[in-house]
Structure formats: structure tokens, C-alpha cells
Length: 68
Image (cartoon, rainbow, N blue to C red; front, side, top):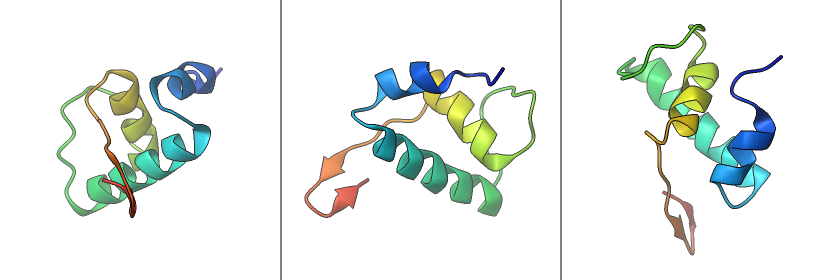
């Protein structure tokens, strides 16, 4: 079983594509500077990013040019 559930994560954003971009951008940030504020059972950057999204620590803003 994957935690947090993908079905739950998709309800927090407007589409599954937004979720992918958001997790990838945050994962890259964690690779450069591991400044995560949460405790996560995994040490992989994308997994940590998904946990942060599930806990509401990561937000996004949709612009004409993409996601910020």
C-alpha cells in the first residue's frame, strides 16, 4: 500500500498532472537542499514531497506560464 494514497493526493490539487509537476519540483528542491520539515518513513525526495503535499505544507499557484 502506498502512503499517502494517490487518490487522496489528487483531491488536494486540480489534476493529476499538477500533482506530478508539484512533486517533481519539490523533489528537485529537496535534492539540492534537504530542508524538509516533516518526518517521513522514506528518504527519497519525491516520497518526502508527496508527504509534504498530503500534510498541506506545499502549495501552488497556477499562472499563464505554468505552476509556481
